[in-house]
Length: 184
Image (tube, rainbow, N blue to C red; front, side):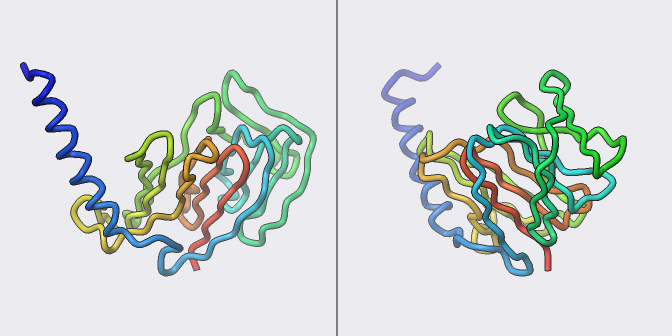
């Protein structure tokens, strides 16, 4: 098919094209959103409540907490999660089984009804970035309207990222911290 020299040339051309696109994407908080950072040592899993979409369950080496994404209030709770089924329960949420995402798998929504999108890119692996693309935009076609909302610089590992069901919140969870964005 392709010899080694052709593959290396194509890889270098593709890498240069990707870097040129990523350099066009501004970093920072997207317009119409507010950012909140929380330190969470040993973060393993997160999950948004489906019924109370501002509520986020966070499971770390320190235990389980319920975070109100609209206020930043964190309440520690008794651990109640199933690592095999990737579900968590909270007394404050009643009988709801909250789907988890993190080190053992699972996933959060990466898009909203309004067409906002989160995409993970790793042009210089293991360093990873999360790109926010608003209203059906594409960072490949219109990088200038997108935002790099997270850059780990290879320091920590992204465990999970995604939107709440309502789309008014999104979270980026790494092994050491939690970044919460709220639509304003």
